[in-house]
Image 1 (spheres, rainbow, N blue to C red):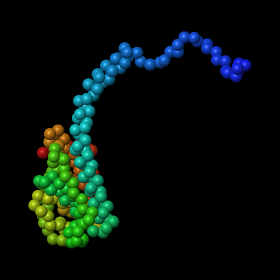
Image 2 (cartoon, rainbow, N blue to C red):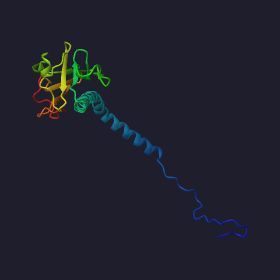
Image 3 (cartoon, rainbow, N blue to C red):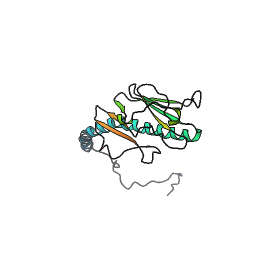
Amino acid sequence: MTLPTGKLQLRHRNREKPYHAGFTLIELILVMALLVVVLGYAAPSLSRFFRGRVIDHEARRFLALTRYGQSRAASEGIPMILWIDTAQKVYGLRAQTGYVEEDPLALQYTVDPTLEIELPQSQAIIQTNFWTMAPPIRTGQRVICFLPDGYLSETSPDRILIRQTKENQTVCIAASQNRIGYEIQTNQLQQVAR
């Protein structure tokens, strides 16, 4: 309703101060105590979770590099070499020597110092001629050769083990049964013994 002065008349139904909802001090202390108990219980398992991420990240990066190498071999029509130097803890991807002078898309990665890459000794790579697709390599290096038809060469290893010795964890990257590519084994190393 409007007054003769032009102002609106406001009716106050409740003359008391309005109640503002919020936490009381006791409720706030109880919530904080509950959070401390939950974090104290979960912290040890969270620390193990983050430590396991290093080996998982390295395995996924290695697997991504194998797929990239396979893709480049098929698209460019030349064999790609994924070389692994277990002594220096580095690996990389480049075009096979003899097809290009210099590979501008060559990649190199360094393995985390807490990890080691291991290739089982049963897969020794012997330097052979051009037709068996084993390129000349340095001592201590092992290679995976991706052919332009999409397959792995016969000299490529069947398994690559990435170990985190401090945490006693191992991830196995194995060639698929049809030898088209590599995959991370999910049935964690039942047959792999050190």
